[in-house]
Image (cartoon, rainbow, N blue to C red; front, side, top):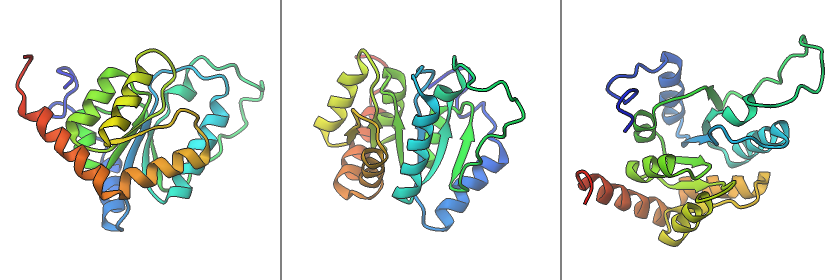
Length: 191
């Protein structure tokens, strides 16, 4: 848990809670998708692929778009050009405490940093990792080996949509992730 911004100290925007509640009311699974502050070569293409995968998979998503808001070069000097609106099944947010959010959703998709991986495993939800560098590949491999999620090594619309569907519908994956979360939460402190 982040001691400075944990679930007990953070007040969610009312429209975020409404988004989650409304999705669940309509029988939709909610996933978090965020790749932290990763810098990618074509953030627009990545965002399009993520959006299309969300739509194709039928889930609702809370999209933390850090990768698309950082260190990108503007392709045009026309600042009046509007951003393409996102479908209604996507809620965007700058940041959200994982310990608050992950206990309210069905799955998490992220870059595989140790902190975010730990948070999703602790919450007991299936985890999808799209690694970019370093230990992120290790965490992706571990999630797959444990049967609690998947590692999307090449992000395409189809690969992400398949991972989202598996994470939110495969009963074995869901049960194993829940069990891992229970085991992690049962341990107090460091051993």
